[in-house]
Image (cartoon, rainbow, N blue to C red; front, side, top):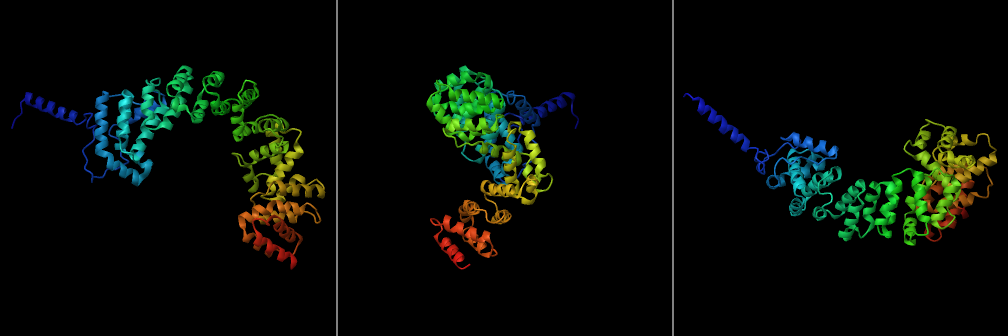
Length: 479
């Protein structure tokens, strides 16, 4: 059979039309699949250019993905894909978890279609999303293709509170945090005031303060406080000062705390978060005396001694990111070298060398008493014993009782402080080990530390451990 040229041309047109129809928005290039057909969940999407654009634009802070079709077509494609793939994708999530689902081509195609629709018509997209089954697939789409793009990209509706209301209906907490995060990054005081005025129920508590304080420009901090109710000031003050120069931030925090115009409620809220405030003070370059005085000013007492501040510096230095404590434990660095490095690292400790040495020794003696004694190799036996007992009092918390015993046995005999030191560790040992602690004491050789430890049990266990106290008394009587 011969084909004429017009006939061949017509056939080519028909074939081209058929191929084009197969990529309509409603089909989205996805071949029909029955429930029982399996698909390799790690295969590459048939539209990689869309996913590539999604990632590229998000990294540049642009709108997430270009809208290739009108919103109505994106909606139809999303709804069709969701209906077709819902059960299958839930099965992928169940078997492979979120990591497997995130690589799945059908899941990503579905998510991209939602994002395209959402960017053009957020109200309609969110309304439809709210009607989806509340299951793992919905939650996965919400995270990866609604809130993650919201956090990473800019959208035209940033000032459209109706759009944010729609987003809020899907996830109230996340929507508020994302909104204030964007307001903070823009430094948009007008939008903040509008949101506070028109969405008051979103800002009833201070949970939004952290996100806002983290992103708001520090140099415009006074404007921010003026826009917020005083009962929420503390929630933005603390993240604000954490994102600027530590000394500048602490100076401003102190100025707010000390100002006569600052409501007492604000001071109380800052004191209630003393763990955060205390961390700022501890990390300051001020002298130990100054830092102790600042803590006392916030706490209303003088319990924050200079010794506690030095102990905090030593602990952070030894157990920080570089974990110098572990380096000492493994023999990679000596005690004296660590002390020298700390004094160079923390110039504010100048003039407190003896106190610093004592604190470093207390920490290091927990892991290796013999090597830690290098710090006192040129001192008298009396000084060394004093430091050992001080370490026993101030450190050795939660340490194996065997190590504590070794420390106490190394102290010269007849020291009157020994019983008090044993008592300081006895209650926690009884709480942790119970009967096993007393069994261990019974197994010790007949020597002074055994009897001191048993006497400490008798004195410290009366109220909570009467049976163990009776056993300890019997051991002492039969010695």
